[in-house]
Image 1: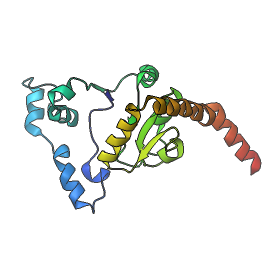
Image 2: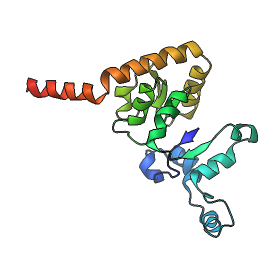
Image 3: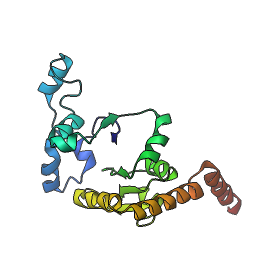
Image 4: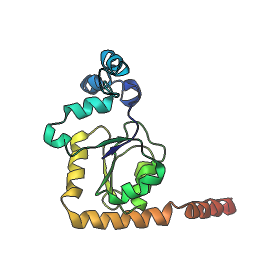
Length: 187
């Protein structure tokens, strides 16, 4: 299941402007498809024609496409059960992630995380303990990490238990309030 808003940020906001080869390789995914959008507005094409998700789904082979669901945004109340039902939670932000709440929510549900080293994620996900961290913009490493967990149930379960323990031990509102209070007293 791929969950999230069906849009992408501007290309040059997501990637290093100096990495011309990378920019050239991803540029087709960011190019506007005006004709597809117009057809969609005229009900001559699916509502999301021309979108990133539409193009991504169209690029999948039929056997893979049958196994992938694009869910767009789902209600927050539904997320906990989605996290708990998942074998692995994958979070590969391209731009710096301030804190990375979704990985912590998945960890609290006992789901191991595969994420990119971006912003605060490196502070919440413990590489090799609660999940696997890979370099940003490294799709092969991301795929390899996902497969490592999917192919090793014992590792996946061990990391899921560790993820839940870390989330509940460090990231509940009570724990955060205790640490803030302790810092205030120390000043």
